[in-house]
Amino acid sequence: MRIVCTQAPARAMGWLGAHRAGVCPTDDATKASRRETARRTEPRRVTLMNQTEGHHMPSTQDIAVVRDLAAEVAEIAALPVQEEKRVLWRKLNGLKPQRPMVMMDQFCWNEMNIGDELTLRCADPACRGYENMLRQVLYQWRHCRVDMVIEPFIRVPRAIHGLGVGVRAREEIAVLDPTNSVVGHLFLNQFQTDEDLEKIQMPKVFEDRADTERRMSVAHELFDGILGIRAEGADLNLSLWDPISTWMSVQDVVYALADKPDYMHRLVGRLTDAYVSMLDQLEEQGLLCGVQSLIHCTGAWTDELPAPGFDPARPRLKDLWGMGLAQMFSTVSPRMFKDFEVDYVSRYFSRFGLVYYGCCDPLDGKMKEVRMIPNVRKVSMSPWVNQEKGAREIGSDFVFSRKPNPAFLAWDPFNPQAVKEDLELTRDICADHGCPLELILKDISTIRYEPERLSIWNDIAMEVVGA
Figure (tube, rainbow, N blue to C red):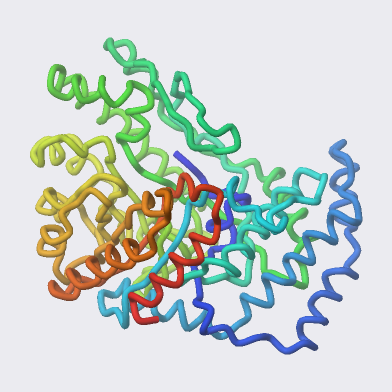
């Protein structure tokens, strides 16, 4: 399970793009005023908090760095183009798109620091985390914004505990590029006996309110007068089989599904029970996230959420998007997909307002089963699908959430014409079948240390969708 983190720009800023052509610059007087506000506010609460808890105090220079970056973000967030893009996302998510939408996410940031745009200057850990987030947001806005929207607030994660189920992966890793977080994994099987099933524990969710207040105090001191601040609850990836594959290995899971189906039903059933318990507790305690800007790297803006009766202080599952996937089920049959995935995830997705389903798993041959999952609105169409078949199955009932192959950015030499032809093929197939379309470039493991490839992909994609 993962929870929203302030150091992940897409989550904390709630961004998702705006195209260069739509930029309407803020007047110079407003820019100067915001930057002056950022410099002048005295960091009393941060100083007090750090003295009280024994941490070293952030320097005046660190705080100035963060506030100056926040002022730049605030200027961009105030541009009219941000609401224009929200409107376009609402239309797409309502299945009445004005045009296809485009998003880029999950970058290989280690290869992109040209000209020191991403070089961190803060020493304090809290300031350094915020600085990293803000620099990444500004970098993407300048170089590859596609249809991102930058929100005028920061999401600060509440100190929520008990979101795990007591099992962690045991693994060996292989590293090709020590600067890259993408590594190879060899997972060791921890589930072979009946006793092993007891390793999955029922969550006991609680919030450390003092820690939440500390986090909010830091955020207020850094961002007051510049960006809004929101305490953010849990926004969860509810995949069942991604974690199970890290506890057993994909190979051992596939064998066990065939050799020990009753055992695997007990395993996934117990994990589902844990998820349901976790969601119950989060909802009862008012610890769910607020209205989302993003769902699985795509725009989440919609006129359908939150549901009637929404209380911002106590969000409900029916106010939110849910997200699920079963990537390791790429090679299983549709029947096995239904028996071991659809029947279980339906227990909790029935409670959400809308659902994004899928990731790298090719779902073109499993749409009959995907339709059985409650509240699905977007369906991932990975690089490994038959697009014609997928579009025929999706029609106008769901958003065709296409994942263009990031390998186009890794080849030498880089071939922009191949990128264009690939995106045009998707656009034309979806147009033929009436599919609402979004293009989501993600899982970008390498660009061969040539970040200009991202800018070129940005321009090609926006041309292809008619932006």
